[in-house]
Length: 258
Length: 164
Image (cartoon, rainbow over all chains, first blue to last red):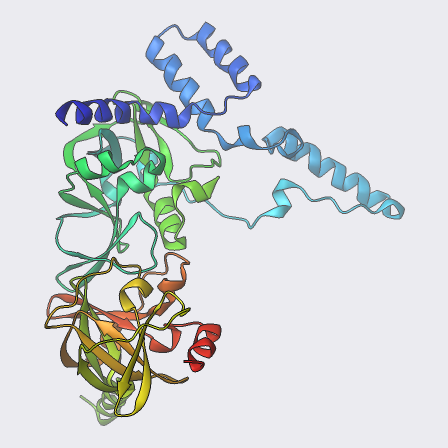
């Protein structure tokens, strides 16, 4: 049993890498090779490769790629069609198809900032302290029928109703077999900002002051909006708490993002 | 406090309607149903199974000459079945559609809740059973799940029950 547990933890330690290295398009492989030539530090290379793979743009069909350059070109085409009204073709660009969402810069995107590391099933996750709403001990959670597996129910804390998320089931549902679920020993609830959402955590690891260059930031739109970036030294995910709250409010599991 | 402010405060209290809820237990969770919909609470008695009945129907009971269909509340709420105990009860309820019985682990008490004490349940999940929850309330440190009985069955299922 202990052996199986250790093996499962080892698997989980590599989980982030696996999560981020699926579906590698050729273009990105070339980019990764180019980066390798410039940077010889193995760890940095690995990080770059991971981050390139996280980029959601990789999954977008070539004609829908919305790079800055691409958008500029699309705008030029629109102007041209305005001059030729007899050939009216409705152009739907990436820019026009979605709602405009203004992403306000995070306060922790300047200077040093503190993060809390916690772990779940061998996976370490970082949360910026400024977006940490609090930490509670796990208490009785009332489950509600008809909810997804990752929604464990409502925990009462004084007059507050906390919506408890099984972090392992949310972040890596495909890895959560019965053995892993039974081995989880959740002890804490990590509150997300001032929301009612709390993530279950097994252990609180450490708080660390990070500098901006210690994180590989994911500023471009990604298919994993909950991921603000990767902490280079610890090779772990840094949560974008606000984006995660939005997803949880929508009831989105991680697989519903694809 | 000025008269105007006092009258406004009274108005707020008047709008904060107090409702009574009958609470029952299922799998250690406490649920509440509107007392106005509860006709009576019966001790468990033999429930006669009905061949060909839908899975959510446990069977029928004879209540003073009237046939009442008993719903398997546990299966409806996605819970595992459990053995009948001395505390098991059939709560006879009257919904908008008809009179049915729901089998519960035990019936606890009648509680008074102000409308302001009831919160919406988290809007997560689109399974049918998620619709049953009318709201949640913190009652003496325990979370009370308030059930909307009219949504316990779909329109088709209510129609189906009429044939029993």
